[in-house]
Image (cartoon, rainbow, N blue to C red):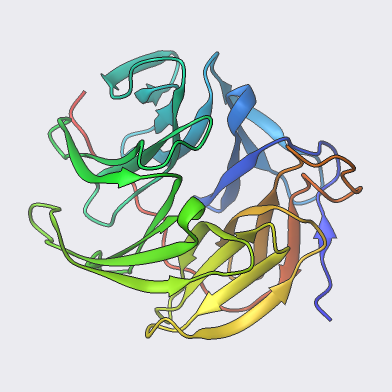
Length: 277
């Protein structure tokens, strides 16, 4: 049985977006708009806070963070600079996002009521312009890139499906859209690719983290003591998992916690985003 340790302190309604950046583990608390770091021996600490839902961040070369926030893309530093308004209306928000190895930032949108097909995956290009990458999604999570940036995995949590795309390294355009894996029990949520090319995914609703081989087969299943794990990262010493207590009638003491278990599988390096501001 896998042994898990929980960070002290807060239990989050919707913790997400784990990253290892310059040796520190960071995450977001989506609904309160907070970016937090996880000390080794203490409760999460607030790095930045905005009055909008904060879906995910990636570190920027030169400092600060690019963020999928509210209904668009922002830069978080000493203040908040909005780069693009992508989704209109109160029924939408930005969700998960990540930088690819080339420095482009990718982020998905979704409807609060999970309206089928309302979500979009956007790409923030190196010159700061924004392009539509994938339409017709419901709850996009990820994406997660291979170490060389040539392969992108993207989950549509509401559909229980993880897709795989080939990425043009120069333009960032997507090709060869395939179903990589399907999940019948639970929903694929946040993901990361390890140094061996395997994909790790938090499985919301199943209380699991699954490791997928490059051919899409399940290599490993780890049970986790919370119902709704949301994102994963590999520090080199541990597998760290965020979770959510939102929507649970009787959450347990570990629902909404950040949990860790020893794991020596190394992750790929966190990519820094580059964009004109």
